Image (cartoon, rainbow over all chains, first blue to last red; front, side, top):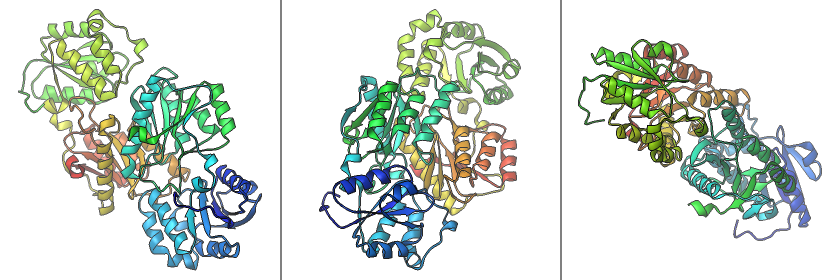
Amino acid sequence: MADAQPSNDPLAIICGGGSFPAAIADAVARRGRRPVMFGIRGWADAAVIERYAHHWIAIGQAGRFFRLARAENCHEVLFIGTVLRPPITQLRLDWQTIKLMPHMMRSYRGGDDKLLSGVARVAEAGGLRVVGAKDVAPEVFVPEGVLGRHAPSERDRADIARALALIGALGPFDVGQAAIVANNNVLAVEAAEGTDNMLVRIADLRRLERVTLAPGIGVLVKAPKSGQDRRFDLPSIGPRTIENVARAGLAGLAVAAGSTMIAEADQAIAAADRAGIFLVGVREESAR
Amino acid sequence: MADAQPSNDPLAIICGGGSFPAAIADAVARRGRRPVMFGIRGWADAAVIERYAHHWIAIGQAGRFFRLARAENCHEVLFIGTVLRPPITQLRLDWQTIKLMPHMMRSYRGGDDKLLSGVARVAEAGGLRVVGAKDVAPEVFVPEGVLGRHAPSERDRADIARALALIGALGPFDVGQAAIVANNNVLAVEAAEGTDNMLVRIADLRRLERVTLAPGIGVLVKAPKSGQDRRFDLPSIGPRTIENVARAGLAGLAVAAGSTMIAEADQAIAAADRAGIFLVGVREESAR
C-alpha cells in the first residue's frame, strides 16, 4: 500500500503453492526482516516453508493462525501462492473462524476478489495488517519495458492494447487477468482454467486448424483486474508461461508493469530469448 | 431484416457444416419457396446439399457463385452453417474475387463480425440481397420462456443475468457469444474454442477439482454479441449442447430468445428433460 511504513517486525507469510512464497521470503530476509512462514497444508511446498521459521495451518483455522502469529510477534501478514477455493463442505473450521463466518460466507459468493477481500477482513479482525508483495518485495515485479532480446512489432502493440482494453472491460465481472489477441482477433479469455490451460488450448486449436493464423502472430496479455485489491492474487508469470506462449505459436507476452509478478526471472527471460518471443512490461493505463 | 418483403424467387443458400442448412432449406421449402443450395466444399454435408437443387463452390470463388446464382434466378442469398476462417494462403481466388480483394482484406483483419460484414458487402456488390435465417425460417429460433420440464431457480436467474451482462460488455471486442457463470462466479468465457470445447473444459476442471462447486450449480448462457449483424453467425444450440451442459454439471442453459437457433429442438428438449437441466429462452434486454 502506498502509505505503508517499512516495518521490522517479523512478517507472517501465509503460503500457498508455487515458487512465489520462496521468492518473497528470500526478498524479505535480504532486507533484514524475519519471515515466518505459515504453509497451507495441501498447497505449500515443504522444501520452501522449512527454510525459514514456519508453521503449518489449514484453511478454516483462523484462530490457530492468530495464536501462532501473536506468539511470533507478527503484526503484518502477507498472502502469497496458489490456493484454489476449497469446497465449502470440506472446510474444518475452528471456533474463531466460526465466529467470523458471516464474513466468510459473504466471501464465498462472488469471484476471487470478494473471497480475498473477505480473507483480508478476517485477518484485520484478528488484529493483523495485510500487506501486499509489492510492499515487501518490489523486485519480484516485472518492470516497464522490453525484457530480453526480442521486441513487439507494431501489430503486436495493437494486439496488446486490445487485450488490455478487454481485460479492463471485464473488471466488473471479477474475471480475466489474461487474454490472447492475434491480429486484432480475441482468441481466448481466461476464467477458471488459468493461464497455462488457456495457452495449451490455443496450441490445440492451432493443431486442429480451428485457429489458422500463421505462427508468430498473437500476444498473451496479463494484467490485474481493474479495481482489484493489489494485495492479493496478482497476475504472475514464470518460465513455464514462456514455454506455453511459445508452444501456442504466439509472438510474445505483455504484462502490466509493476503489478505482475515474475518467478525465476533470469530463466524466464533466457527462455523467451531462445524461443524468439518477446516479453514486455507495459503500463496498464496505456489502454484505459 | 425488419424491412424484408416476402419473396418467392428461388433463395440461394450458401451452406457450411452442421445441421442448420438442412433445417433452413426445409423451412424455406415448406413455405413454397425454392431453395438453391451452394455447398461450401470441405464444410457442407453432401447428404444435406443434394436433397435440393445444388452446386458446390469454394471459398474465394465469388465470381463462380454469382454466375450460378444468376443462372438460377436468385436475387437473395442466405449464409448458414459452420465455416472457419481459412488460412489466407490457402484461398484460391477467382478473378471477380480478386477485384473484390480490398473488401476481403479488410474483412480478414478484425473479428468474425467484420469478416462476415465483408462477405455481405461482396455479395451485395454482386447484385444479391443478403437475408438472415430469421427472415425465412423463424421457427428455428428459440422462443421466450421455459422449454421442457425444468425451470431455472432464483440463483440460476441471477447467474443468467450476470452472464448476459458479461456478454454485453464484450460486444466491442467482437468475441464471446457464450459464458458460464456459477453462483455468481464467471467460470468460462467463450472465444475461438467454441461452446462445446468450453463446456468440456468445465467438466475437466470439475474432475480435476479446479472447480469445486457442487453439481447442479451454474448456467451456460448464449446470446448474440451486441451490435452483431443478425444475418450471420447467430448463436446456436442442439442436442449435443444439452449433453455437454449436463456433463459440465451445470443446472441448465439460457439463450437469447428470438436470436438463438436450435437444431433438432424436440430431441434437445427431451435430452434436457432426461438430464434434469433447464432450457430457457430469455430476453436479451433483461440484462442490458
